[in-house]
Every structure is written in structure tokens, then in C-alpha cells.
Amino acid sequence: MLVRDAMSTVVLTIGPAHTLRQAAALMSARRVGAAVVHDPDAGGVGILTERDILNSVGLGQDPDTERTHAHTTNNVVFAAPTWTLEEAARAMAHGGFRHLIVLDHGEPAGIVSVRDIIRCWVPALVS
Image (cartoon, rainbow, N blue to C red):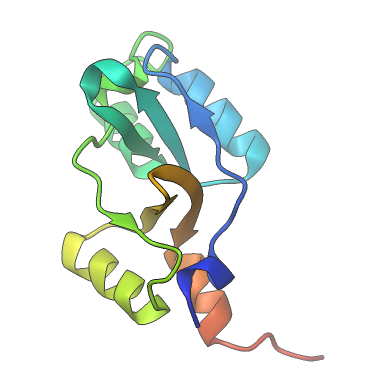
């Protein structure tokens, strides 16, 4: 099975000036654990995850004043839609993260998460 078969094509894209509270509210409303951050000044595409927000709040930082650009991962490992799920899982395990932005022809086409991969690998229970 390939990444394109598992990835979510609903990609939340936010800007670097969003506050962490705004980012968290958008992520919660979309029920996603990561957002693509488009920041041309920082090299283009980065990712903000629920873990980034949690770490900031855990440090006592104010989510109403902290901006996403200060918490975005910019050295992102990208997946291709043609990667196998094993390749994606290996990249996640090696990098210690749970989300990969999927690029298709240089543009974000989706996000694949550990949860997406598990859903494909473990058949749904039938009651």
C-alpha cells in the first residue's frame, strides 16, 4: 500500500503570524494533529504539530502571544505519494515524529500520520 492510499488530503495551512491558540483552534475544528505552515521568509513549508503546541504551553508560554513561526519545524522530511507505507513508517521512526507532509510536484498534497498507517495495516473490527 502506498502513502497516497493512506494520506489525508485535507491539509490545514496556516501562516507564521497565527498565534498558537489560533492554530490549536483551527486544528481542533478540523480534527487534525498537524498544520502546514507556509512561511516564505523561513524557506517555504514547515509543520506545526500538537506536540509543538503542548511543549510551548508546558514551558509556560502564552498561546495568545506565541506565534507559529517560533514553533514550526522547518527542516521537514517530506514523503512522496508513491512511497510505501513501510518507507513512511521508517522515516517517522528514524526522525521521531508522527506526521509527514506529502509533496506532489513540489506542492503539499496531503499529510500522512502514524494513525493513518495503522488504519491501513490493522483491519477494522467488525461487530
